[in-house]
Image (tube, rainbow, N blue to C red):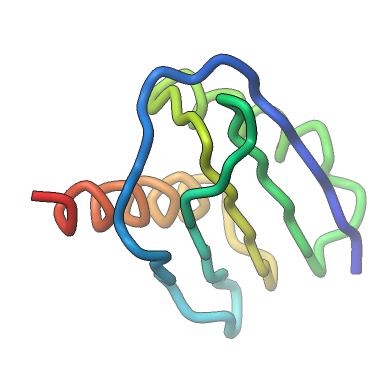
Length: 104
């Protein structure tokens, strides 16, 4: 297992809904926990992955996600069992969209 941590500063969108979990850890999949947190405007992402050695790919996917959503005061935890970058992006977007839907 490998643990990767990312922090993105100065986001513009805050989520106020209760924490959400999307996805299921299983064969080739992952789960995402997303929750509001007082992080002085930052978004933190912690990844626990069984696919060791793919830090550069994770970093690119996380950077793209942050550019798309610009989250602030948000903590994201990912438990991964080898999901593809496309699945990672899909699950992250589902988590944010679920929280935005709950806030309506």
